[in-house]
Image (cartoon, rainbow, N blue to C red; front, side, top):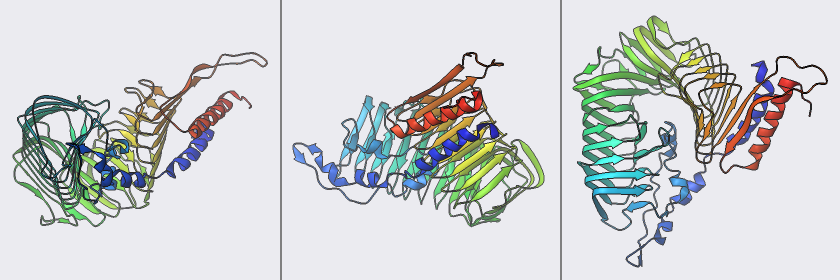
Length: 511
């Protein structure tokens, strides 16, 4: 760690400045001022005023699962000419069939109804967002939502929205995408074929029913959600366990499940509000998301993953935890919770850090690590093998990783900052999306870092000469550059100072 102390010091300063920029709630409120929608004109007449209740009261909860900014409402431009809006007039209904290409978001709200009937849909540059009492109904249709990077696109249903898809195909460019269900939303998927992986978060009291799916994906069971899976294949069920949870439980053996139920009425389960049923499902994996303060004992089980949550300003040291481990009687070395494994196997350990929590990681092999809100991770000398996902910093959070081996994606998101230094990242290129910053210093990389959208990517990879004689000129070989979109000048100053400090440290240059 001593090798990068000056560099890290400047980055910590930059991070502290970045953390002061909280998520712009005032812009969300402005974007949700429905009076602005009155500027739309239909048949030469101004449309009616809409309700003023915010459809995105669960935005913070959505962020907790790294869902792209729903919305930040497509950069707060609700009147974009390429936005399909259904529901701006009472009983608004749109039926789409045949080949349909669209470039932008799709919004359905009020009591609007959008119907896809035997349609072939290609939708670029936008999510499907349904709120209030909006409905989307699709039958015998195919949907292609191109993505530049995984989790770029989302299907989102909140409040009393309803989704119903039957005999449909979905394609997201071979990359994972998001499904968000919140409040009292209802979603039904019957006889579905997915080309790509789905990551679904359920918050509040939504209802989900899936009957027939080839590649069902992963589902975060939380809140008071009700979900049922039947004839579903390739299903990962994340059991969120809040700080009130007291669980002493054994999961079914094998990967085929009939009549599985998990809720507060099941023996050994207390303190969870949701209920899930799985029947006639194949290739089923079990996973846990325990929060600090929870009391969890798992016996005689094979777990695909345990993703520990760190909330409410928690601090913890994560040391000596390894993927692909069998445990006879093991107390997980986390002092902020009770977590015991008896005669059980864990394939993947992951760590998710929220709000202002801070953790330190050393001497581990993990599957995924992520920070959110204003959380932070300081890590060194560990392996992130990607068996649980990727390595990411989102919102206004920050990660510093030194001397680590990362065999999956490194990414900064939203306004997050990720510093990767003196590390091995051999298979992919680090990336930044949103308005985030990824900084790569003296690494072995699979490709140069890539900046998407308004983000910034920094690369420093300079090799020192073996010997340099006094009063001689020596070449400095390597790369030091910044690739950025629209970015504040202040960041450029920070970059310059960082590079100057690093050159001083490596070559003894005085400025």
